Amino acid sequence: MNETLFSQIQRLFERTYAQVGINLEDCLIDQRRCGQLTKLAGASARELSELARTFLRAAGDQLYVGIYYSRWLIDQLERHDPRAGLSDRNIRSLIMFVEEINHALHAALQFKNGERAIESEDFARNLELQAQVDTYLVLLLFVAFFRKTQKVARTDRRWLRFHLFAAQNPGAFHDRNLRGRYLETTELASSYTQFLDTLNGMRRVEEIRRFRSLDYGAKRQHIFALMDVASEQIRRPEPK
Image (tube, rainbow, N blue to C red; front, side, top):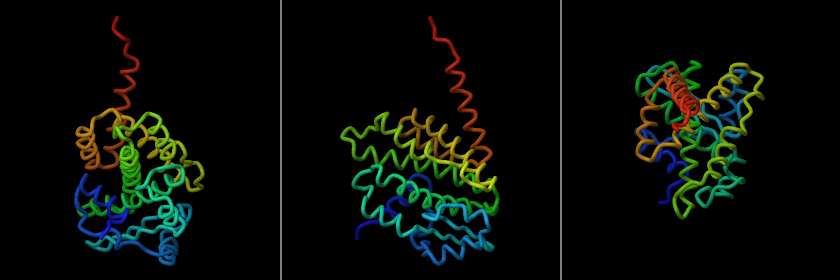
């Protein structure tokens, strides 16, 4: 039986971090249920993308997850399967597809580790930051797979970074909280992935596993510290 793109991405994240214990494809919901959950989520949720969303609800020791993809997004991925090549025709759809799987997986892992404040802003920002970082690394794998040298060129990285970071428009949100959330997490993810680009494969895996174990405040401080080091290296004069 052939694996789906969904199951392949879930398996990749689980190999990197930890087993979530469930098949996240079982959490997929249809448009009708997405509409119901969006109404329950409040006014700000209506500003989120209608193409892909993840819904979370905690009840006692149970976490309920719903993952929604629009028919249009699935059609795009089926017509331009990223496993056959990544291009301008499918990169935005793949980004949304990967991020929702990532949201669900890390939410479930955090819940298993005892995190119950899933409605807090820090929890939401933590998921968003982690998803942008992990999605960038997934995109790199897709690009490298189709390179004979298995190396990603600088132009490839610029292209990926444009679609994942530069093309985002947090200012389009009317809700002040959403605007701040996406502005901050996009800037942090962009800076952190630049640091990850300087590491070899083994060190990168060790780093992102440590990073994933941090709460949102610790993630921010870690990235700020890396930015300070980078700034100091730029200011440091070259030896004569």
